[in-house]
Length: 221
Length: 318
Image (cartoon, rainbow over all chains, first blue to last red; front, side, top):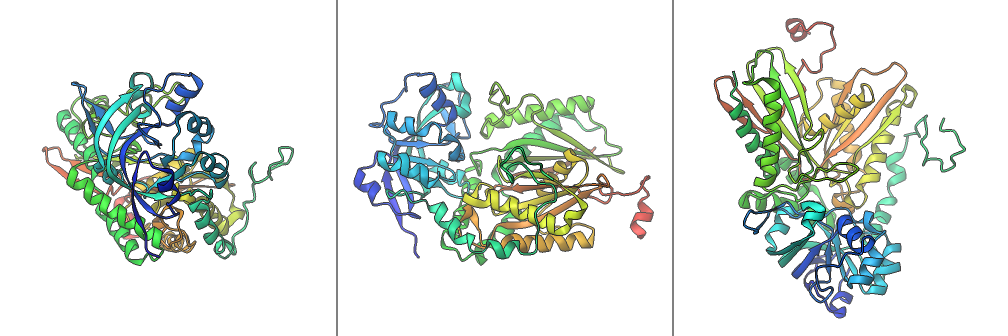
């Protein structure tokens, strides 16, 4: 199977999203903003006004904290850019998508097909995974400029909302589609066929853990 | 006497090198993996990572946006003396960490666990960690920085003698399966296994096995060295590669370190040192010479000694 490369706008048309297939390699153009737990809590729980016009300026939410600094003169230096694991943000994403019209969720490791089917597909959104992880230097090269940093004082550099201008920024891999299918679950299923053989001869630990028994009235021995 | 200014300036250089330059041993390992990999998606990932190392060096920018948690291992020859003493050394390492965070730049990852306070410089309570080791001879100090990433890929379990090697294998596989899926462990990685010690030292041994030993090194105990080979192969036979895609490269190498433990137990920890295996080392001599390298060479015969007294001649003869 050869890998298909796609250039995609961060304010993509519904047709462009519908055309994406699991495993496509994507390069992004346009504005993308970082938002993770700090931004979600401030915008959704503290009800702060989001300091951007969304989704007209950007429909791409990057689960990322960059390796970057704010210089004394107010300019920015951005070095490497790498995503953080997205599954932790499932709690906020449905409301965030409804509020901001995000169509591209960009991060590490993807979400479950249940997440995709429940609120990605109805919102016309897909998940793009960073590669590696992480190709921080390559992605850094794709940052043409830093447009703004919002909420830096409230949230710190790592949790702030960075607005970056992407110029053929990538690579990213399409990890969900508009059927709600999940690239990682597809790969897991292929690997699962081999698991029994790899574990052959091993035996469960003599001292169990809760989780291996979900009944808290059980003992672990 | 080793000048304190030289310690700080060397430490700043090390922070920069660790973040930007992939160590040669890991690079060799990954290039070999890229040659053998036949899963299409995992091949693409390895190729992108190799390009990323080049881009980082060319641009002098960090390999990965996640700086991990910068920390220090300091090893000293028994006759080394630091200008201003050890408190001055710790101050110099904290300053170097803060300066490099702004200078490279690195991501300011370190926050208070409850209040999430971020000083934007990777310094705070207990951060960076500074750990010490000593060698019987020498007037030098080795500064080793490791910026280990990974909220995932690490686990601890108290096993027991009756679990045996099969139990060790199972927990090893459990860790790879749990954190390898979706590539949460950022594999292929240098997997470190700690066996024995008390609970905290078991974690320390495994972390040091992954971060302070290079790809291709083997434990000095030949039977443990055999286990390292076997475990590397076992991990690579799962059928899982980079990012959890179908592939045959999960483990670039497997390093095992042991410590004596409670007679009733067999504690075990597993650690994954990721695709951006950030480590850099320099030896500073009393005469001001600085030698850079990427092999921490931490696990010397002295570090693995078993006897009450240190008798190097007898150890050498055995």
